[in-house]
Length: 288
Image (cartoon, rainbow, N blue to C red; front, side, top):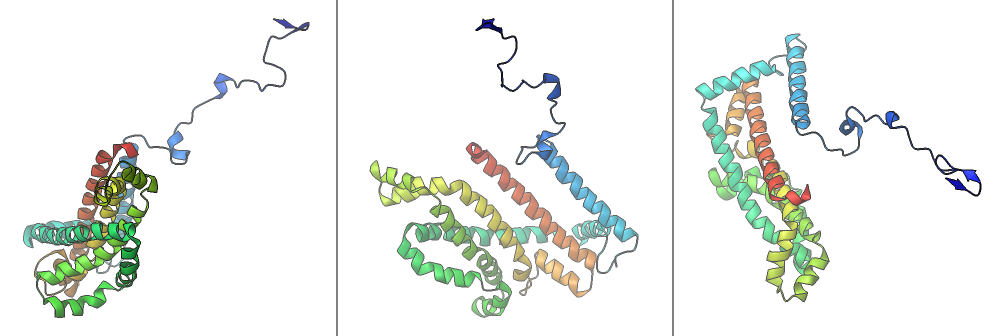
């Protein structure tokens, strides 16, 4: 082809040359070096399991070399053997079940109370102005310092344990719910009013549905906080539960049994957290 007497056989003058197809080599693992790149399906679990075993192996190796004192920092194998013995001889599974029931009872009570209160605090500024200072004040109070008061108020029965677990969860959750409600776009509310919805319908059918993905995630996080107060709750005249088992073993310096109880709490929490993550992914596929 000729233009004004000049033959053009290649790209136009001044245009960058097309890169050679052979020079474009895909990276062997592009997901490893790209920001926020999705991992292949089985790579994430493989990394998690591999890293966990590497940490346990390093811990076991350090203990076997005698670099730690078994009384204060036993090897993973000693903790595992202690846990097996506790399952067989000390009814550890039953204690774990009792602790799980206590945590869930307190957590569900906190959630049932915190969700409507947090929505009202964010939806109605007068409610937020009235309640937020008190909520902020109480959530900074250390739960262990309130153990003597809780015994005076509720005695040494089951109510005190549930109250302490509830106390460590409720006031944090109220503010998280209020933040979720605050993130609901104002356009949603205005459109709902435009089509004739009343305030109750806006709260229930528009705001609650819009904030639900974030709310479920915050419930998962606060459930973990509730587990962290278990030991405090179960040292109050308790004769059952993982906190009781850990506290009793501490008296006799049975460090492997103490750490076995702590590790079991971690396993229960991890399993629950992963289950709630799975439910979140299945329920809100559109967020993926």
